Image 1 (tube, helix red, strand yellow):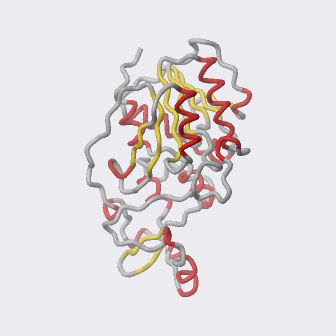
Image 2: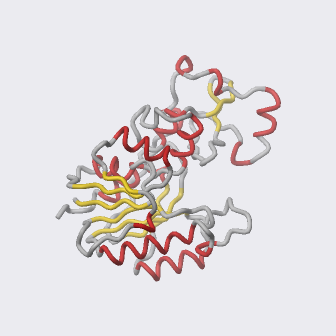
Length: 270
C-alpha cells in the first residue's frame, strides 16, 4: 500500500494500517508541527516527511490511499464565532481536496469533528461524493470521541468492546504527584462541565489542551500522557521525547488508531 497522509500529526494512520495488517510499501507524510514530526520520526524512521500540505503536488496513481484529518479549529463547537470551512485553518480542507483529486487514489479517508455545522458537513459530502459515518471511539476505546469519517471504504461500525476508563489507568505508584489537583486548582477547573471529574468506570475524552481529569483512589488528577496514549490506541511512551505539554497536544490532535484500523480493515490491498 502506497500511503499519502495529510495533516499527519504523529503518524497514527501508520499505526492503524499496521494494526489492520495492511502491508505498507511507502508512507509519505505532510505535517508542519515540529513536535509531532519528532514523535513520528522516533517511532517510524522509514516515513518520508514533508512540511506544508500546500506544497504537495502528487501525480495521478502515485498513491493507493490518501488519508488525513483536516484542521477542525474553525469547525468545532468549542470555537466561538466559528467560521467553518471559511476559517483560516479549517479552509485547509480545500487543500486536502486538491491533493485527493490530483492523486486519484483507490481509497480515501477524511476525518473531522462531528460537532461541525450542518452547512459545512453538507459541503464536504458534496465535494467528496459520499456521506460521512459518525464513529464514536467509545466503541473501541475508553473514551467518548465522536468523529465524522468520509470514505469510499465499505466499513460498518463494530460492536462496543466495553472498554472503560479504569481499564487503561496506571497503578497509583506509577503516577507522578504533579498530576494530582489540589485546592483552588481543582475548584477552578471543575467549573467547566467537560472538566468535571469522573468515576473510574466512565468513558472520558481527550481535549487538545488536556482538560480531562479522573477520580482515582479518592484523588482528583489529570490523565497521564501514557493513559492518553492508551486512549488513542498507541503504545505506552509513544510520544515520549518531547515536552509533556506537546505530548498532550499531539495526542489531542491525533486519530484514535483503533477507530481508523477498523475502517482500514475493510480494504483489500492492491
